[in-house]
Length: 234
Image 1 (tube, rainbow, N blue to C red):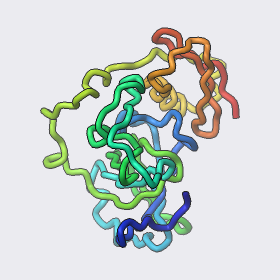
Image 2: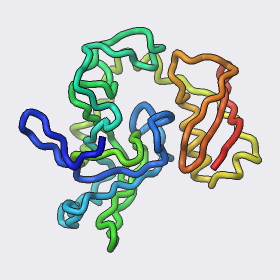
Image 3: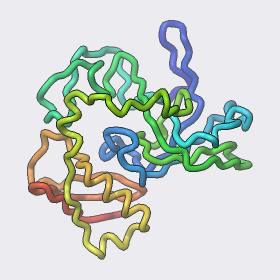
Image 4: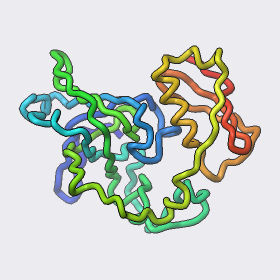
């Protein structure tokens, strides 16, 4: 749903920017931010927020928090429980014990690395970031600096996610197909596929999955723990 702002109970959430990534659809997007630093993105501010003074000092920070809208998951109703994909899509957990997009308020939170700040004549200030887990065009409500001394908790426990975070696939891409991509795209795609973009309940080894990435349609199969790229098409 396209909007310039979101209104809830008389409060206004202004869209200050939109992020541009290699994912035009939800399928394939990393399940968490910071998992795949090879993924690059641009944050472009809306015209009324392109004042360079609003970014004064931001280049001193290595990471940022993005507060954004699950724009493809906005609903008028909500459920107190959801089915996390990493638990196979069958076990229910409390919505506030997950990062599911299906929430009372469709608001997301991501931590990204700030690679550089570019000042352009036609787009205003542009933030170049890496490690984002957002779909192309996602509206952003706010940006805040990440503070390691306050935001990092090395001894934190991860609940049910601690049992699934080490899961990965072996990715096989033929030389012929790999040469269709730039080295940067190839590295990023391999990392995305290794994290297994499939829903956890889909295990059919003969099924061909399709994913849009960086202007290409990637088709692949998964047998046991090996993901094989079958084709890359423009």
